[in-house]
Image (cartoon, rainbow, N blue to C red; front, side, top):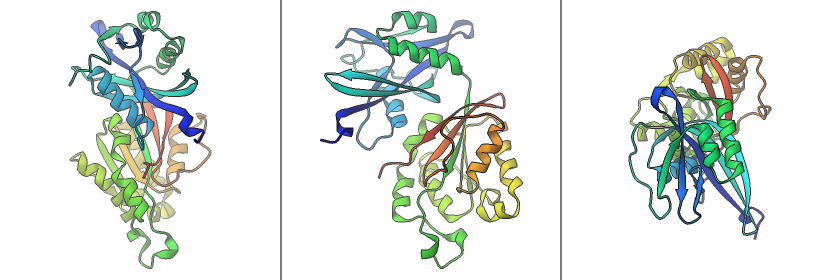
Length: 299
């Protein structure tokens, strides 16, 4: 048995909403099986990303759809001698629940102030997650910088580079990309007009019943002629205040990231994105407060 098989992976969130007088309330769940109070979380299914797991589990354990904000970190437990790694996000609940949890799994949900939630939680590790949530704050918007999925190699393509399509692996990645971005309640998708970018976002925008916006300003060809065009384009999208995906190319996206974060320093941003990976920039009032990395879909 591999080491990975000896680890249980799970995802969850600090689910929050605005209560009376616009004060923040946090949802805690009571699990009758353990008779404890915890944050909503659950095990990851095979081939499921951590963020997709967290989004699904929050819905199943609380009945609330939500909009995800920054990743808050991870907690490691030992359960019956097996390590369990739980990754958490901030998630704003919709105004009303769209379903109900299984009463055998969750029989009570309470909305409490963060201070009262800390007191009621059964585990100290969950209290630390509340503390991280308070550090990041609320009211952020996501800007996703997505590299197109795996394309046919340049040396294997005889036509114009802008017409170079996705490889078979890239097509599979594109078809399985949606669940990684549902948590962010995407308002709009902007893409380079290169075929490999068009094919990357097409299955996702089709499922969302959304018309993508294609621009040569996000293409490699335009970037080689005018580097400011893509930078200005991305800045305008961030300033719009809408949750947005930009699908573009590796030479461009690291430059966009550097431009948008300015002199701020974030960890783990030294390497370029691999095909179908993304950075998620969480911004508020024109300032980026956190950057998350999204893995390529498992195929």
